[in-house]
Image (cartoon, rainbow, N blue to C red; front, side, top):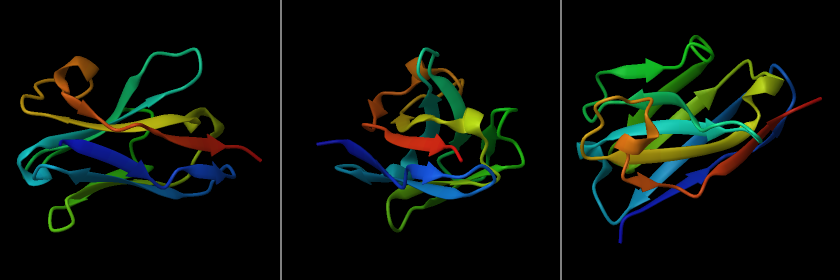
Length: 124
């Protein structure tokens, strides 16, 4: 059974940091690109970041460049999203996702499997 589970969300003050984890089970994550998306209330789901299957290529939305870092540990079958200098506008439910043919990393319909999401709230 293919499953993705996110960990690490929570409440943090502006300027703070969080690290999200996306743990896979039922398949070997190393062969797939993995993306992070987020969805704020009343807004569409947006692509935040993506890492290629080999880990050699990473992608970021302009809004998070320089603040977020995506990485993967294939030995742990896990992908991470390190989020620094968090802003209130980063508040959203964050999802990780993967798929066999991710041609456009920021488009959700290229991803086949999704986690249940983890809430990130940035507020003082």
